[in-house]
Image 1 (tube, rainbow, N blue to C red):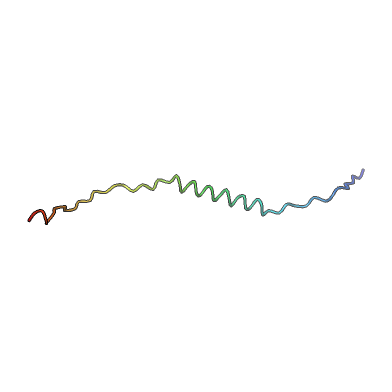
Image 2 (cartoon, rainbow, N blue to C red; image 1 turned 60 degrees about the vertical axis):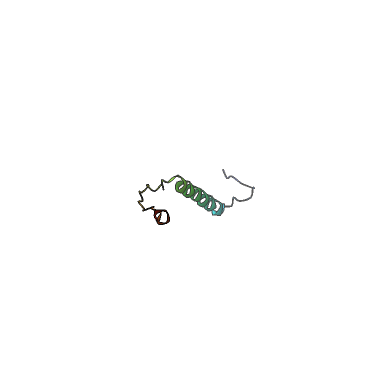
Length: 57
């Protein structure tokens, strides 16, 4: 038994849409990673002489 298909032949979809979607998802993932990264710098003690020479005279 032969099967006849009179509809239009199926065309393969272009992979451009999927590639753009993957790039977008990757970009959003990188931005989220950079936003949630711990970038806090520990505090450091700075000692500086704050004597006022003008008032000392």
